[in-house]
Amino acid sequence: MAVHLPFENTYARLPDRFYARVAPTPVRSPRLIRLNTELAVDLGLDPEWLAGSQGLEALSGQRVPDAAEPIALAYAGHQFGHFVPQLGDGRAVLLGEIVDRHGVRRDVQLKGSGPTPFSRRGDGRAALGPVLREYVVSEAMNVLGIPTTRSLAAVLTGETVTRETELPGAVLTRIATSHIRVGTFQFFAARRDLEGLRLLADHVIARHYPEAARSDRRYLSLLELVTSRQADLIARWLLVGFIHGVMNTDNMSIAGETIDYGPCAFMDEYDPGKVFSSIDRQGRYAYENQPQIATWNLARLAEALLPLIDEDQQKAVQQVENVLEGFSTRFEATYSDGMRQKLGLSTVEDGDIGLAGEFLDLLATNQVDFTIAFRRLSDAADDAVANDELRGLCQNSPGFDAWWVRLRARLAREPETVKSRRMRMRAVNPAFIPRNHRIEEIIEAATVANDFAPFHEMLSILARPFDDQPDFARYQESPQPHERVCQTFCGT
Image: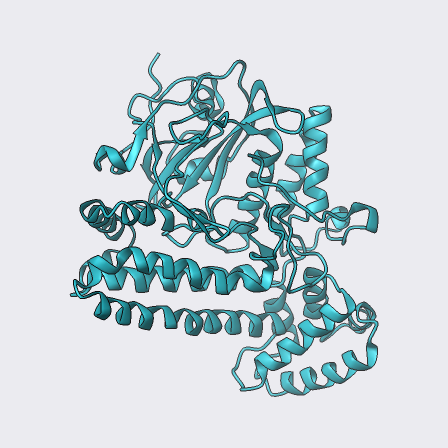
């Protein structure tokens, strides 16, 4: 029986060298773990149908929907600074695109759907743990207001995959504004395929940045717009203590969304040099390095676009350098605005970011939990108990006391009431984040005991990250020493 979904396939209309046509590999015994009903409705899909037998066939790769044209995208990339001229979707298949209820075109991709021509001897499958991690973290990021890919469904395959041990296999249905990456541009630039580069750039402009088409320097405008979105995105990561883990150019979406949740993590105690990825031994992708790495990645995009920007390479280089210099300006503006909000400031004064930096220094010196500290700060202004609790987090109390006096003096110059400030701060300083040790708990429960109740519970809690949820207070807590997660893994 045909499986009907309203797919369109604009990327598959591009020349064959942009992708490989490949169908997902059927699995033994698919079983639905979770369907994102809210997202399904937003996509204009019927959740009941998706949760039924035909929907499960589409979500697991058992059957290709009749309007789909499954492809694995080709791209290159710098991985930890080393260029690899061909990577591509080695364990994912793009089924097609759906125009959602808001008129936005969204990619529908099966991740863990079997080998492709880009698998490089891999099995093309995904283990259950990384699928659950991506589902939880991507949906949490969305609710926190950070541009991200989304998770429509997680499905057990009924098969095992071999990593360090035998693990349950799973497939994630990932929804993205785009799966085009910086590395996609590098793929054509490395081959000196100017026609392919131009076709790709024109496709991206038409789909994601139509305002660039109105510019007399359309390709330079494209670089400007991508740079602006990336600056905003990285600033928002830092404001919630998020560490992507592997910011390779093939993991950087051209649409400005967070993509490829591998060894990602939210910090517990604040440490600007924090690294979680087990393979990032030099700290290239540490928390504090993320803005610099984003700039480096954008420079690689700029290099790829040079022949489109100007036939005179020297003139093209000068133009892109001017654009890239704008990254730090946009990043600092977004970060500064967000940090003022976290401190409760609605007006702008010159010393505000220095005041924020002093607070972060206190957190680092005393190894204070980043999320808890800002949440306590939200309540401290009009709650003596919360004030004492915040002060207690910083063992260096004299340093905290001096800072607190300066913050109170600054807040006194604000026009709003204490009550309205507290409400505004609580709307940007979450009580709940997907903490690493809790994610490991849900993965262990699902993998070892086939128990998905903790997974569902965590998603329910993270759907309201700014609300007090006393019954789930343990999800707010920092890990005990024996619960600390020091390394995370990509799952390949």
